[in-house]
Length: 92
Image 1: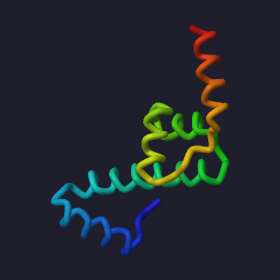
Image 2: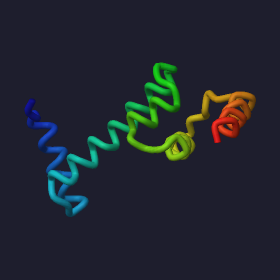
Image 3: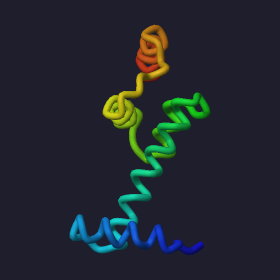
Image 4: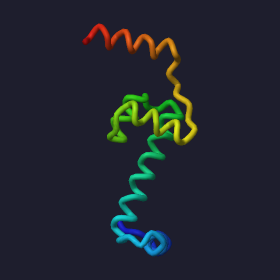
């Protein structure tokens, strides 16, 4: 896969603004895009919060913080949360 002229120009411009290597800028763009895409999947109900966190390679609590940062409310009800805590207590 290759980048077209517009994408390369964007990376060049962002690299200049950030005063960072182009590869670092591209890596950051991919990470930000990956997280945004995973949040989209979660909002659409296509993945659970656990699956979304796994795909994002972060803990569920970190993903919940990320959702909060982006103003996305969790689809987990308070009762589900309490049930999850009770299940955790039984396992430990």
